[in-house]
View (cartoon, rainbow, N blue to C red):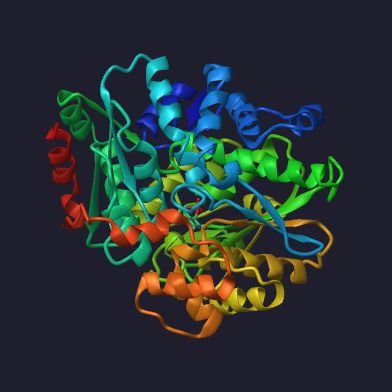
Amino acid sequence: MKFISTRGEETVTGAEAIAHGIASDGGLFVPEAFPEVSEDELKAMLPMSYAERAATVLYKYLDEYDFEELKAACEKAYSQFDEGDAAPLVKIDSSIYMLELFHGPTCAFKDLALTLLPYLLRKGCDLCGIKEDVLILVATSGDTGKAALEGFKNAPGIKIMVFYPNEGVSKMQKLQMATQEGNNVAVVAVRSNFDDCQSAVKTIFTSEACKEELEKRGYILSSANSINFGRLAPQIAYYFSAYLDLVSSGQIQLGEKVNFAVPTGNFGNILAAYYAMRMGLPVGRLVCASNKNNILTDFFKTGVYDKRREFYKTMSPSMDILISSNLERLLFELSGRNAVRTKIRMDKLKSDGVYEIYDEEKEELAKLFYSDYCGEDETVETIYEFFEEYQYPMDTHTACAMYAAANYMEKEKDHDTPMVVVSTASPYKFPQDVMYALTGNDIKDSFKAIKHLNITTAMKVPKSLAGLRDKKVRFDTVADKDKLYPEVLRFAEKK
Ligand SMILES: *Cc1c(COP(=O)(O)O)cnc(C)c1O
């Protein structure tokens, strides 16, 4: 399968798309066409393990990879999850299910892609004959950074550098990154927000001068952000798997539709659901949930994407984003795959901070997506009420999706279609906020909050989080947002 850029004529293989991360025209790589999964193929996937299902879906896009090798890589990646189950589906009531994607090494859904990306990237480089070492730059709103560091630590021929907003991540997230082990990693806090981190990294990626300078030092640049198709592809698999689990447990018949509600920031997770639908998965509606930073909700409602607004820090920091990168891939589809139109809009976003789509596109959007946002008070209430009613503790991001899902079911009077709420992080990643929601207690110390949360919910504490307390802080660099490139060069020098 070939891949094309959303902004131009560039055509590459899947291996090249993953190795480079982003197109040289600044666009994102998308498959030339959506591969289809027939009902018979779905049926054949029913008895498979999660790893086999994932390999089957991935191979549809990455057919120049070796299937058996891909399967072995998936098995290795997903064996790192609790009880070997990467994406368990938990039934809440007659129509609501939680797809728990937080049982991996860093307790957030990013693990599903980032435990596998090192293989996809290394193999991708081999397949296209890249001999240089790979330098991965990551901008993170909290969870991607840790999952990428953990996935790539000590990987031969790869170095990884992560930038996060100094004041924009939770205490646990910060501690997870600052204590990261490995001989090929670096972490830099940035005196700004996530959008600036992401823009700075994108600028380095698309600068010819940076590229040449790093080439001289023996590196090619790549990305572990969800702009990289290698991040997106593994995420498509869990939508298939959740659907298959509903069929095999007798909740639905093969062919019946289900809805998914996804807490959204950079639009990567929900875009994977859209891709699954385009491949033939029977999906009704996709509920796009935002937090107080409700730029996407406004966009879906008005057709105008306007980032000239206040940026809020919320208790769901991984969704505190105003420039939602992967929306570009959806815009490309909405425009009938019109690269010129997509490029004009993205340029306009950069120069004016705003663009607008056509009415036909807006209508198409409304057919597929329902969009809503969840404020801070609603986040707290949702966590509390859901625990009261179902004894199910959820994290602050998942609460946004649950809130939007409930609104969708009420407003659109759709109580019968199964609703799968995508649970993106362990409540233990945001223990203070979750404890506050459940009990009203404001606990300052994260580890104390973890202990109390455990007493309150009886949910098992992930070892990787509890163990942070005794780890040494290795990284304490703080940089201005226009001083990231010197940090990159310094890191690239270090052997
Ligand atoms: C990254 C993240 C999100 C947002 O996912 P996108 O793919 O950026 O839309 C939501 N919840 C959690 C816990 C995350 O880490």
